[in-house]
Every structure is written in C-alpha cells, then in structure tokens.
Length: 243
Image (cartoon, rainbow, N blue to C red):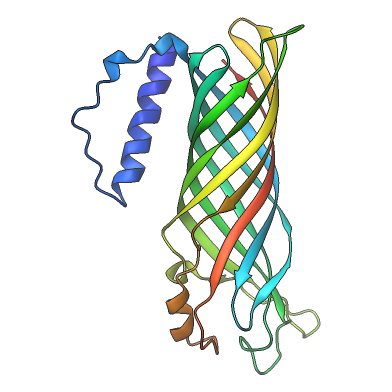
C-alpha cells in the first residue's frame, strides 16, 4: 500500500512541475499495466562538489564550491539486473567565476565571485545491477536530467575592509529550466527484504546553459557585449535508504 501512495505522489508532483513549462499530453498512459510491487523507493542526502563551465569573451570559471541536496529516489525492476531509475531531488549547485572588471570598473569588489543556484531536479535513466553476494550488490547507472530553477544569486566580496556586499538576485538572468545528463556507480547493502542502505558517486553536467545569455548584455550592472553561457557540473556523493 505504501508503495502505491509514494508512486501516486511522485507522479502527481512530476506532472505538476512539468506542466509549468511544457504541455504534456497525458491521454493514453495506462498506469494499470505497471506492477507496483516492482517499484522501490528511497530517500537520500547528497553532499556535492560543484563548479561552473563558462563560455564568454571576458568571464571565466574560477573554482569549485561545496553544495548540498536531498531527494526521493524511485526505481522499477525490468529484470533482475536492469532497472529504470527516477525520482525528485532538491539540490544546490554553483561555483566561482572570474570577471575582468567589466562588472565593477570602480574595483569596489573583487574580480571573482560565487554564483549559486537551487533547483528541483527530475532524473530518468537506466541502472545495471549485479546479483547480491553476502547482502551486497553493485551497480552502474546513467541517464538524463531535467532541472527547474528555484533561485539564482551572485555573492561578491568587497575590496574594502570590514565591508559586506549584499547578494545579487540573478533569477531574471537565469533560464527557468535546463537539461543535463548523469553517470555514476553505487553499492547497496540489504538490511532486510524491505530495507536497504545505499551509497552512490555520480557525475552530472548540464547540456544546456543555465544563463539567459542575451539578458546579461542588457543588464545595467555589466559591461558585456557578448552573451554568456554557463554550464553547471558537479560530483555528487549520496547516501540513503531504500524501502
């Protein structure tokens, strides 16, 4: 029963999020053909190392930062070694960018700053899993992700001692969604038939720019004369339980 409740909740949330951005036809989808006993769900927390790839005539990437996320995972067993994986995650990502003074010709802030974003992310992929040996199994997984951006900010450091610079909201300069891909490895330990502990290491990268590049050109705080492209990437280290 609890699997049916979780499955229906995930389906409703996913459709609601997607409907905010695209018109998705729902007719013809027969959920009754799915065997809900083959679904497994889990919860996880995800510390990550995040950085940004930058394409621009002036700005460039300048380092990684630590971020954090959490989520609900779901998998559907096609056969004993092949699974469809999905879920809903909340995660933060970002990194440091260096700018050659075009942002602030008066040099009251340092040339590098941190860009931070948060999103709701929906992955979809395939998992190849080994048979259990001594309650342990191992797997490879990969696929695509769709992210819906919730917040976007830039944090600068002042060149003046004991001075704090407020964060700058760049959500109007940010795409409302982005597409990415992921690939990773994991291990799972069976505590009982209905409870398993798992750990994963996953590399994720964006396939579309998170920046609305043309908006940066018209932003009054910048001296850009070329659109900027920003491609987030990260290495996730997830731990969780599956039931």
